[in-house]
Length: 169
Image 1: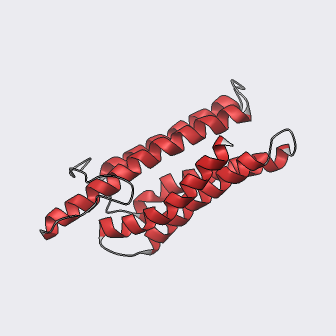
Image 2 (image 1 turned 180 degrees about the horizontal axis):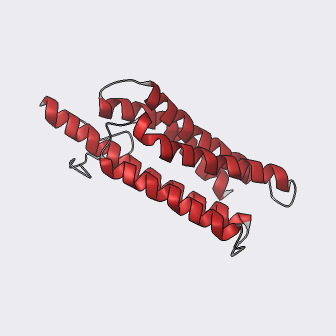
């Protein structure tokens, strides 16, 4: 049930992330739409991974779990192209999350340190760490953009209080 609720939260964040990214960068783009779609896709994959129990339909559970991880890696690896105006720090965190996910994958196969469920758990942790950093980067970029234009920035983003900006620049 935790994975289902987490997935609903992440899928909902996808819609807000798109709008916040457009506000932070000052323009609507194909990249911001892709970021929103990929985050929503990760959330939907989480929901279905949680709904399909591994002991009932192992192959389907693994398809949904794998799609969650694949979408996350595509999002992180593609972020410099999807949102090049974000602070450099979020791009470095994204690279670190891809490396960490690959490391977790290797601990599952071929090392067999833990099961696929352990790998899913690690991947979900990386997703939430990345989302926290991403939300902070959006807030900082929006604040920096507002400072450059010389107007009040309003709320930092749709999920947090105003930020101080200048993070990772």
